[in-house]
Structures are given as C-alpha cells and as structure tokens.
Image (cartoon, rainbow, N blue to C red; front, side, top):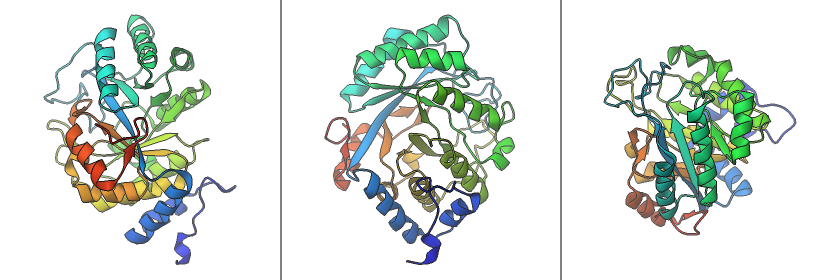
Length: 330
C-alpha cells in the first residue's frame, strides 16, 4: 500500500491535522474503503449494526435559520408547527420502536435552546420513561447549559445529539443565528455532565472537500471524539434555501464514512438522513467502509426514511445483524 495511507489517527499521541483529513478524503476510493474496513474490523464486530429510532417530540417553528431545515420559522415549508407531545404519546412510540428492533430511542425538539420550565421537565419525564422501557435514550433539544445537561444526565439520558453540520469555514453559509462555537459549547456541557456525545454533520450543503475535511477534523479532535457520529446527506425540502442544492454523489458519502471510521475508530458511525436516495449497493459500500448504525422507522423528524421492511431485507442480504436483538432490524 502506498505511503499516502499512513495517516495519524486519534489513537496516536499526535492530534489529527486538517491536512491528514484532506489526505484521507482525496485517496483513491477503493484504497480508502479497504483501509477503513481494516480499522472497522479491528475495533468492531463487522456483522453488527446498531438500530435507533427518532421521533419529533416538538415540530416546527424553530427560530434558527438553518438553511437545510424544514422546521425553521424562517422558511415556508409544508411542515406545520406542533406543540410538545405529552409523555404517554412519546412512550407509546418508544414501545413500538423497541418492538420493531430499535435499542435506542431518540427524541428531537425544534428549539433553538432548551428552556427550563414545564416543557423541559416534561422532556425529563420522557427520558425517565424511555429508560424504564429498557431502551437507550437520546435527545436533541438545541443548545443546553451546564445545569440542563446535568438534569438530563440525572434523568438517565445516555446520548445528547448536537450536530456540527458542516466545516467551520462554510458554517456561515448555512446558519447565521448561532455560531460554531455555540455548538461546541453545548457539546462541552454535555460531556462535562457525563453523557455520551452524538455529533456529526450533513453532506450536500454546497460545501467543498475542505468543508467536509474541517467537519471531520473538528469531530476527531474533540476530547474524546463523539461516541456516535451520524453522517447525513441533505434531504431537499421545498421552501428551504437548499431545496435545489446539488445532490451528493454516493462516492462522497462513502468517503466521509470511511474517513470518519479511520479518524474515530471507536465511535459508532451512523447512516442517517438521505438513505432513501441510496440504492442497496451504495449502502453496502458504506457498511463495508465502517458504518455500523442506522435509523429505522418510516420518518426522521419530518423527512422520509426507508421502510422497516426494506431495511430488514437489506440487512438480511448483507448478513448484518442488529446489536440489541441478535437479528435483523424488523
């Protein structure tokens, strides 16, 4: 193998450099996948896939102006504004998710930031209820301060999701209502409270290779890196600034997954939004390159997801098993 495959990773004493990441993303695709597959097999069971299900517990009306988001109050999209769900409705959905093979239940609220009070207390009750069902619990509620992070941890929340979305130099082209460092501050609060971090990004926001490299660079240099790294491709939503954005080539997604696996060998790398645009072959290449998690269920917040039956068929074809159930996600 050529010398360009000798790249520093977080397992070494030296931190990952931006040049390291750019070098990875520019490798010949099959060389990159081969290298990532070796790292994946060293740190994970390649036949196991972790399955999560995501529910929007408060939909629409978000004051953020994220250019990709159907729930932003700044955009005229088909998504209707809905209030925070009641606890029992959420737990009913969590029970169904568990029956369908999920071992982690994720709850998303379209808030810029969590605000202490009755609604936040209701979310804490949701977390406690999900844990009582025997599921891992994950939430994404926007920015949280130290005290809120501590309360979520005390309620039993396992993972807090807060994506960096894109690279630092491209960030202002996507979002103007909060800063990149705001996002990093929330991740710091989550980590200090003792929760696991779920953080990744979105491909297809008009970024170039540099933007993708910057995103992976930031994630890999978190101390420690996120335990869960969702890799999304843009789902185009009518009424958003990115509704007509150029679609991501499947090879770029494979490159991002493979680079994430090499840079963050112990993390779970999740195929997230955008899977409806991928055929079985592209998804298979992602699993080979180190993806070992996926969202199941018909919907991700407000965007479509492959049907449970098609996911079960795909995993069966590939000989992959769900971690929690020792069988394919139903």
